[in-house]
Amino acid sequence: MKRAFKSDAAYLLSFFLIVIFVGTFLLMLPAAWAGRPGRPVSLSPIDALFTSTSAVCVTGLTTVDTADYSRFGQLVILGLIQVGGLGIVSFTSFMLILPGGRLPFRRLRTIRSFSIQGVENDPFRILRSIVVSTFLVEVLGAVALAAQFARLGQADPIYLGIFHAISAFCNAGFSVFPDSLERFKGEPVLLGTFSVLIATGGIGFIVLQDIARRIRGKKRILSYHSKLMLSITAILILAGAGAFWILEKDHAFAGMSGPVRAMNALFQSVTPRTAGFNAVHQAGLRQPSKFITILLMFIGGAPGSIAGGVKIATAYVVLLVMLKRANERGEINSFRRRLTPETINSAVIYFIKAAFLLIFAAGILSVVEAPRGVDFGHIAFEVTSAFGTVGLSLDFTAGLSTAGKLVIIGTMFTGRVGLLAFLFLGGSTRAGNFVYPEAEILIG
Image (cartoon, rainbow, N blue to C red):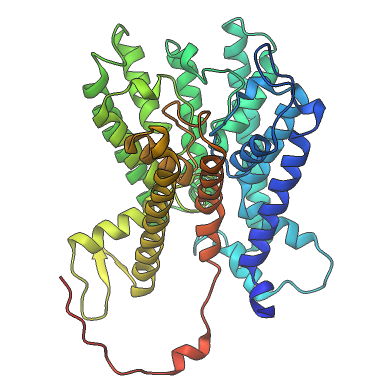
């Protein structure tokens, strides 16, 4: 028990829980809540906890409009998004500045899990690079968005630019507009800027570092990981955009010009991975479009990124396991590279745990909300959005019961932190010293 408590998994969970509860306390302060006519005069504890968890887990699901918070409350949310967006990086940074001499090997390994051989191995440089790149992208994004909000005549464009740049890059999906970005569905340049920020945050710091080193001439070619992540991301975005174009051109995108329709289709393909902004009303999409959105939300972004989901690398490995047979060494060859049994085993276990937790959450929410007349389609969409830390909703979140809100809170936390903690949980090394008799089990 003592050893488990001292593990990085326990520290990680504790760190996120502390941040969530501090955020809940700050959001419950009278100064954090502005409200408007017809709204409660103060924020309830469950709604404060829900908002804080959603912000720290960079999900974007809300039970009350972000516009109902005061400027102080919105800044609290923004701070929670930034801390949660950096996620494990914030955690390791915090652990690094604690007094205490040597840095434990397991923490070096944790930090290095955000890098690969040939990109960067020094943990301090990894942390510095992530913080600097995050700040740089957010500043550039804030300037670009502020200029466009000013062009569109929005009040306080600088604040809007800063808030939405951080929310977009951190894949949080929080917006100070009650309708998210639906009022801007006819602005392809603005939606394009959001798409770039979302994709940059979801591509992974490893890939960003690799690209930067390639541009500066420090390496000749990109790593295999970077090429794979960029290729799969492009395929998912373009394939999703094409599907949404076909399915919604005469429905949700009806009446739009060609360029505007194309940008909305592209944005609808980008935002489920895992930003949560919406330019078109999600409840108004056709059923196949909702299914595609659920699939993209479940897959999520690249590993080592701010995005959620099971990650595209995990989905890629699991797909290979389904389509190709491993050789006698337990390896699978793909694109002149071999996937080791350790990589395959980690991806499959991670995928199975994610699928189980998603099914379990959907079942619990069904028990809680089905008696209130909520159909399973809405439940599946909501749970996947929470688990993938996306934030898209079919107008279901605000009407959740208290028990339903607690289920979604647990799902958001598990999707963002729980599965991440699984990566740092290692079994006993002594168990590997025993060889047990072979188990004969019929499969299929």
